[in-house]
Image (tube, rainbow, N blue to C red; front, side, top):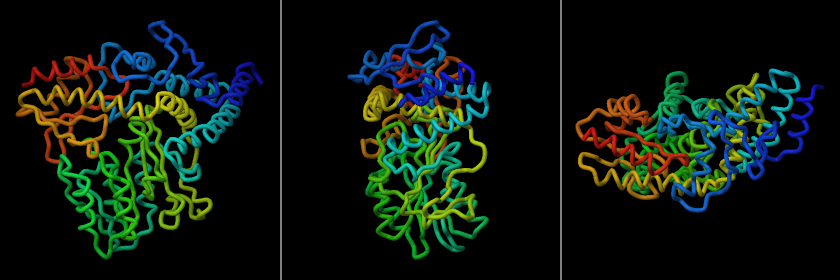
Length: 425
């Protein structure tokens, strides 16, 4: 065994933090120099919401300083420690494949799965790793026990990844895929629940919906899941835009299935996701892969060789977010989006579409229209001319802009975006 492997094994067995190469808990972590040859400060839980309180958090990221990144809802920007953890994993496999595979697998089973279980409020045996939310959404849909003519109800605000699995089952298996129109902005939680309840028929078997929609609307998962349970229905949730933005307790929410990407708001490695199937739902949702899956061993995880360095790197993202605190993440992202909304509300020609209450809008996404200007043109010009990355939201009947601010953004960056938007009015 070479010296690198000895060190790797020893550190893996000793750490309770983020990995096998000394990327341990943040309280004692001192980074390697990055491109600017500066050490990153020790990460700690910020006390306060202003930019100064979050300066050490921002210093953990290695984004090109000429870029303002406000498109986190499309793809999260991993902190440097996550990138380093993934790189270390690939080096381990490259230098000694068998030992590297073993160590990474051990890290996934001992750190990643328990960490996600802790983060999501589940039992460890209720979650399986996937490549992304799209894969997890497909697995929960095709695994649901449905007969020809059985109905699944979802909303017009679903992401294509949440819609297509039901269209697939309608085409292949003869189920009825029914969508209900949900207005944007949301009217209220009660209105949304009523839309679902009024759509239920004797053939309805399940409802499927987002926790947070692409347009930033916050759905009442707990109330919808309770309503579904009262009608004897399965509840399946798309959590791609929720995990990592605010605290989540899936046992408390009471849904039967939940799918999420870990490379958005959780800031995990690109190409990582999670599928949750509650123990009580195993009799209704079965493995899409294993013909011999059982209630005790349901085998929901995709089989075959896994992307071990990426999956092991999830532990770095979990430790990063737990050190900051997801409650703190929620407050900071809300603080930045509220600051943006305040400035937009004072501008002529701007129509805010984000929900007007804390109960109907997510913390980090702000959706708005600029009167008589094409959203795609704004996104393209803002990117090419000003190096500000935002996104369009041309759906739900809107010609809108989506700005998704995360903990690494600042009020100064928001001011700069508003200044640029003024040029389109």
